[in-house]
Image (cartoon, rainbow, N blue to C red; front, side, top):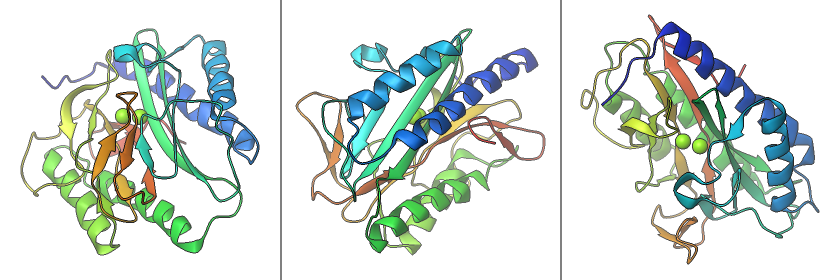
Length: 248
Ligand code: MG
Ligand code: MG
């Protein structure tokens, strides 16, 4: 069931979204060669808790940590660990925060130091595919319009679209209906209505889009080892478009 949020709920979702956004901003100066992904997780968890919020992912279906931190070919759901960031890595950091029972969810891929031009392009194109999807968000349009816009943008830029994972509704649960695939057909799927809150999150690859799951039963990785990027915002559908809750 896709819920329409009340004004009060949207206010709380805005606060949760803003905490997620602030956590990304807080972490950015630390995303450098030499830091471990576990250290980033600890910093973010303390920051989220300092805002009277809790990390949405910690304990979610058994997920062990506050953040999902995925390196290079890893698509999503990486476990923070003693791995050290190196110059040339890309790191996808997915942050969820829960404030007074309402969640915000935003993932972003960052460069560590200098990365090759093709890698930089992957990040730029994946971020742009998110905005191509967001352009379709307005009452009356359908989920398939978002999915199709992301897929079309990705294909035009010769990138693989990971099909096993998708965007979702956000509210009192971090994952609610509807599912928002990053591929699909225009004019299909549920119709968008004012007051829906959605996380839209393309996951694109430089090579083939096929993925497998690590032995930890969580971390999703590309089979061919190609690099993968992930950009996600939580948004609310407004009367004439959308408002981003996890950004400025
Ligand atoms: Mg999400
Ligand atoms: Mg996320």
